[in-house]
Length: 459
Image 1: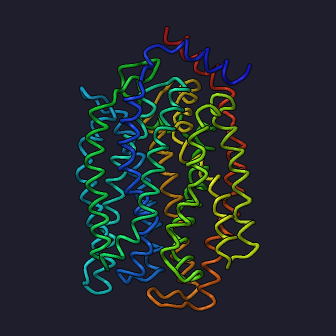
Image 2: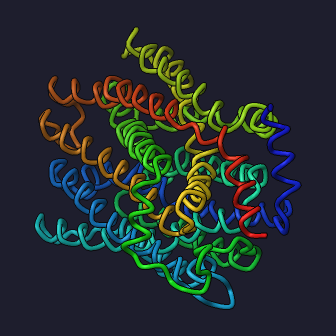
Image 3: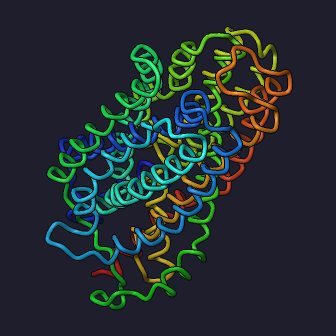
């Protein structure tokens, strides 16, 4: 049975799954603010710490990894908290309302490191960075969980993810292209603080808007005992025996490590290899060019071929990007061409990943009789954050190993070798691993029968 026929059968069997385009648009707009902050931090924070605030690269790398691993523990706690939340507004939506303002304020403090000496800067950076990622968790986990709660119907869920992808692309492009030029025009720490203030205001407004305009529909309960909280021990066991969640979480770690390298290390490449930091805006745009083009065709392609098959194809295509860059790493034209090709590997992150994560919720419910959307999303989010942390740590540690010194016009040959590896050789290895994991993810072909079984149980 072809994908379109399977999805039609599911759509006819699922009742009450009716998020309209206006609601899906509102959800996507809410994600705009979340990704705005995520991109600002993931792309520019390492460079801000080393070249603006004057913190050593090795310390920055350690901070990135330790803080992200600590945050991974809170991810699981936040997911459990969302699953156990009982309010008139639902389970996920209240957290979006409550935590939007603190999160928006925290990003401003993050990019406002005062000149209080080397030790003082490290302490300030550690406190504000850990605070930001904890607050990010309290907003992002409910957002991701809300996608699964708005609809179980796979086509609607895919459309929700595409709406999310549109605003993810727009916010990512906005920050990637404009953040560095605007911050440099204003100058110093004040420039980055102003950029962060804009992002903080946006997240406050979009969080409130998303809260007001969305509706939770799917129940997050045990099928056998719907009114009783499930013990954490049982839910964790169900989670770690969910093979497709394990695969997609491994994919999250790999893909976000790759994404962190392409974003965070790219500014060092344009600054010291091409000799012009502003070229990073062009490279950032080219990296997302395949995504911009893909939006015009993706909805029809998903209906015809399914999320996983498209994700696998573009992941394979993305492997050739670093190979093209190897032809002449010092040519802007060659590097730009490789960047465009490599950008295809980012398509699953932007367009399919959250829908695929939430599909594993149904698999876990089908296999164990327990539906814990918050825990599944928080655990997958841990993979994303660990990947982002590993990417940031690799950048900091590798630069320190190569003898990088922030703020210099030229770097030592060893530092330049490291910058090349961070932008070309390590991303090639990660792209191959990412493709293997996506090949292992074969839930799409089983999902129609799983959802039909779940509908039959609930009758």
